[in-house]
Length: 365
Image (cartoon, rainbow, N blue to C red):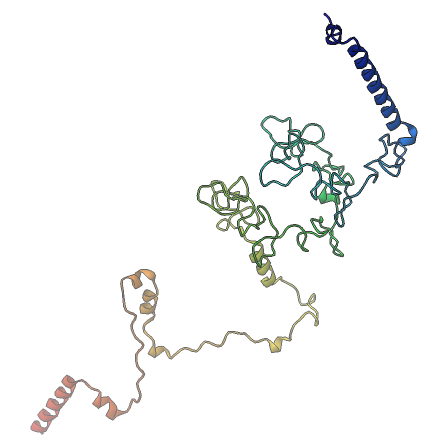
């Protein structure tokens, strides 16, 4: 089969010669460029084991070669326009209203750019090994028994990897601004007057940020499994057959679980047994003679002024009260027990009998 150049050689006899010269020139240029880039003089001098070509100052990109981002405080390398990818350099994602850096096919990682995880059913971005971080991709923490992703220094954030908070004495992981979330680092909620950490859409959890409950018409924050606490999210009580939310200790409130606040307050009020020998004079807040009860003494009226005990007990029962049984009133005290007062307080019938008795006695006398 004839080649394309030989087939059209009858039109112009110099075409084949020109293409051959161009091909030879390009091959020679590629060889010269490869030799120049991989020559010992052009290799990175940052490390004896580094075989990468130097970009500037005899260093490769990994050893601080090349230009730095012009953004204040940024040490990353320039992608384009004097900025790194984080601060606007390089290509942007083609999805409307997305400002992330494009990885492949004009899309960022979130919108499908870059490699995907090889695990079946997973659409996350692939790291080292063809897997995402959740399925074991990327570098792992070298601490024994830890399977988290390494950030820097071959350790995860929990074991000291990554940047630390700039506040003195704080060992938490640093977010945006060089501080941890507790000291003002990271993004803040965009609602006016709110200083909480932003979770999603620029809002904190209280103002609608973060994941929402998957139950229809529920706007509560999702705790676990895509549901809020009211719809089954969070830990459940370990008592058999109980589906209530678990508190401290793994049990719900009805089965003995308590919140952290109630446990702390109950411990603070608890009085531990101790012998007189173990109690020193300094540990006692006051002497035994100065102890006074904060509850005032209970003073009751005399027994003869109160209703019968049986009546009082029956009146205190809820079943009796529901029947609208009135509580007998307290009897009024007797002011005087003189003889004249007693006669005046007698009933009219008794006074009539006494009058008749006196009349009959006078008649017989």
